[in-house]
Amino acid sequence: MTKEAASKAFENLKNNLKETKFLLEKRNSAFQDYVKLGLPSIKNEEWRYTPLAKKAMDAGFEALSENIEAITPEIQALIQDFPFRLVFLNGKLLFQNLPENCIAKPFAQLNEEEVKLYLTHYDHAKSYQNDGFHALNTALNTEPLLLICKNIGEKQNIAIFHILDTQISAQETYNRFYFVLEKKSKPSFTSFFIGKGAQIGMYNQVSEFELGEDAILDYTQIQNLEANHFGVCTIHVIQKEKSISHTSTISLKGGMLRNNLNFVIQKPDSEANMMGLYFLNEQSHIDNHTLADHQAENCQSNETYKGVLNDASTAVFNGKIIVRQDSQKTNAYQSNKNLLLSSDATVFTKPQLEIFADDVKCSHGCTIGKLNPDDLFYLKSRGIGHQTAMNMLTKAFAHDVIGKITDERSKIYVESCLE
Image (cartoon, rainbow, N blue to C red; front, top):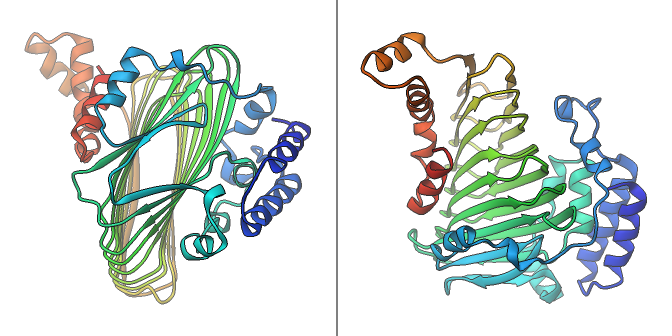
């Protein structure tokens, strides 16, 4: 989307909005930021290997379409597996069914008091993700949604389906979510990004989470799009005292995808756990940027990202751990391991530590390698075919990430996509 197209879309959106003054001011300020910043180019160090701005500028998107036929029988069957769900088609909410203790409310229905009560840290992500893509989402997001999670049981997984349909025309979507996890709530979410169609598709999504005391978040996102689909997905988590977050990012297919994950650990005795897996082929490109910002003592973060790359696919991993001066007794671990199945596959990996406290335990590491020929020979000597042996070894490599997906239906879906 060019600046001219963005300006026209912003003016049209403003004329039809019924949000509070606070939210409208946020939109106006964000659009001015976008005009000033523009979309990040490869001259920006954080986007050095991911020229997503050029893809977004060249696309020339049309108005949103709602082709209900995009929800194929296979997708419909997957949706029906989850009693509690939100279903979006090209950014528009089609259906919702949530448990009693989870309330979804569009921003347009919030009054001033509710905004002050619940959106206390709205757009806190800007402090960490100050670029044109984030500014565009804040300015242009459609149907932004507040989800308030009370004492939800651990077994009640809520699925959020994002179906990007470009069978008829090119599409561009902007969704915004703000999750409030109240004290001792334990919600579980799985976000599915599913693409259909030969036209170009682009999504720009931001999800902000505010975890109350003793809250536990279990969040999995699964990206299975088309080769001509591109996207930016930002997850921003603020953690209060004794809160725990578990996130898994599974990237299976897509043209060029950027995932930003920021974990701001503000209060003591909290824990952030990040798992990631990218299984890429053809010319797919995935860029994972993660940040664990330790701002309180006696906290820990654990991060494990693994990648399997075939053909001419490309992966970028940039993981940063910041330990602030008062964050003593911090334990922080980070690992990125990559398996290359082709001489044309490429990985750029950059683990980072910034430590300003002295009583901490922090480590990071990355590896890039190929399948062990001895392991392949062993399996083939037992009568197992070459391709089957390779599949067995790559699945074994990915098992410790897939195995951490707590929802069995989501795990089965991922495994079926890897068959």
